[in-house]
Amino acid sequence: MHQAIIPIFGAFEAWRDQARAFALSAVKPGDIQWSRPNGSATLFNESPRDLASSAGKLTVPKDFLNLAADVVCSAEASAFSLLYRVLLRLQEDAHLLANPADIDVHALSKIAKEIHRDCHKMKAFVRFKDVGEDESGRRQFASWFDPDNFIVERASGFFARRFADMDWTIATPKGTATFIGGHLTFFQDDAPAAKVTDEMDDLWRAYYASIFNPARLKIKSMQGHMPKKYWKNLPEAALIPELIAGAEVRTHAMREHLPSEPHRNLRKIKAPDAAVPSQDETFASYAAAKEAAKHCQRCPLFANATQTVFGEGNLEAELMFVGEQPGDQEDLAGRPFVGPAGKIFEAAMEAAGLDRQKTYITNAVKHFKFTPRGKRRIHQKPVAGEIRACNVWLKHEMDFIRPKTLVAMGATALQTLTGNGAGILKRRGQFEQLPDGTRLLITYHPSALLRAPDPDIAAKMRSEFFADIALLAKT
Image (cartoon, rainbow, N blue to C red; front, top):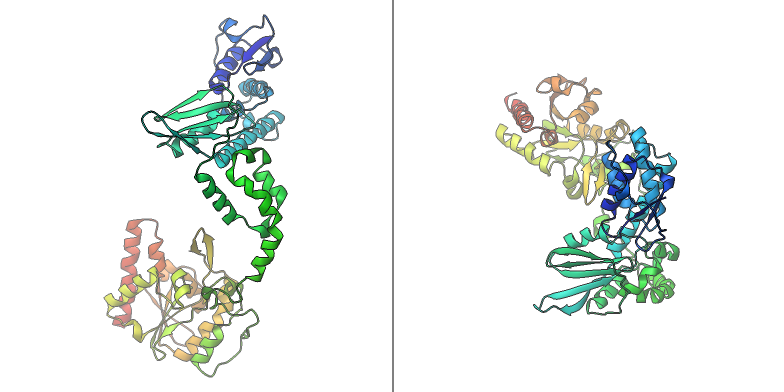
């Protein structure tokens, strides 16, 4: 029987060197007894250094090394034997780790997840306390933690990066880490928790009390994220029994103080029971159609948009521009083409000598369609059903304005006006004629210039867009 002792610190390097020696000597997994220091070791056990050197080479994928660095932190000595068995199997099957259904691979992944969870708890629940100054007057900080596994070395790099300007100690029953003058050092001595208080304790308690939501209290879930074993080192944990006991009363008080009116930014959204105009509804005036559009629920886009963005401009205009849909800034302002695309549009109009105030500008779709991404709202192209549902409003606008020339900016506008939005690159810069005799100029949507993947392509599209708008001043 071979004996292999893995230290608390430097565990990965120790396991790697010993496992390599065993593997090159063809030692079977069952013939090795792995242990931590002070583990059960019998007399006359053979260690890897006693083995005769064997020729050969071991090959493992990089993923295995990363996995092994996690697994050797386990408190279970059987994890070392499992790693060794997988090491031998990888020499026969290099793609073994790609099979999550394999019993050994599954077991290793489960251990690695436990280590990651333990490291996460350490990062979340370490609370540094001010323990005085050293001889030079530099402040010293200490904390106490009780991990399930030997993760002090694995997790300490996080603290060294995050608190690089501090001198600190993290003491645990499974080893201690110190960071003094920028140097990280580890000790194997056990360190029981110490009851130290400082002024930061009150801040932790105030913070925890402010984020505690009694209406969402689930005690089992809370204890799953913050197990009781960590409470002794958390100053805010002293508040938990009191906060739990008063949760029902505080929840009732929160309900009593709910706002009776929506936030001012939501007042523009109309009530769900507002009248929904029908496809064939007629209006006596442009103003009546615009007012009715504010209540439109013909497609789901109304639910998330701030408001309907109707067209604007000269109601006797001979020239009418049609885009795709309002963007983020248009949705907030309630006006078409006031954002980045609007700036490009206005620059092209000015270059052509055209006055925006003498034209009419609108979109095929009147509500902003977007995908939330953090705090931003990212434009999302409307689908055919949404375009058809909104077409009734564009028809009303065209009936009241009766322009001599329409400009389709982008494929969505072209699809709406002609029923065919294909081939816009070949059709742009040309005039077509609608069935009622209205001239139609086809060009890019200004936002396409902003989304061009290459600066040269963007410059070419910008030149072509400006040239298309200039055609309107010549004809």
